[in-house]
Length: 176
Image (cartoon, rainbow, N blue to C red; front, side):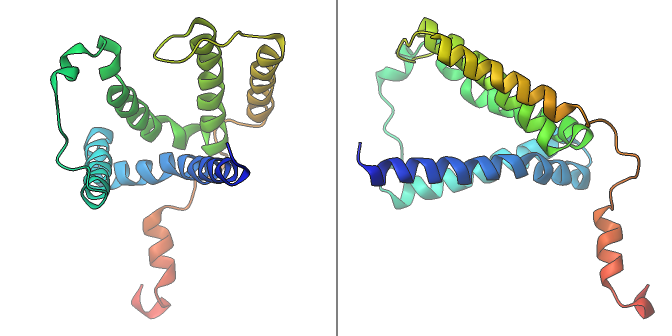
């Protein structure tokens, strides 16, 4: 792999990670405005579907060409969207309660521990990679990071400024 390709991968992952950190807050706001996390999740996934269809159309990969290969997929290959729907919905409920750092630390720690097992046993389509001492130590450090990031977590002592308050504060005082 070239340096440029590696740099592109790193930059894409960092930008994607920043987006993932913001996503629970964005979706929680959508949930509050919609009145229910499931309604917000439908809109969230619907907008994602529209983006994917647009990308597929512009890349010449639409409509999809389904073949007999769909019936030969393992049962777990159909779970990706369900896992995403579950996580997005739970993020709307729990991320605002624990904060962005704590929520993402929990997710990343869970991902790292599960990834270690997936790699070690070659599950879910991953090539088998041994859970070496160095890789296990990396997962342990993530758990330590999770513990450190949660030491000062907990409920806020003062409520956050709501979107309604923020927007009303932006109006001139004569309009309030």
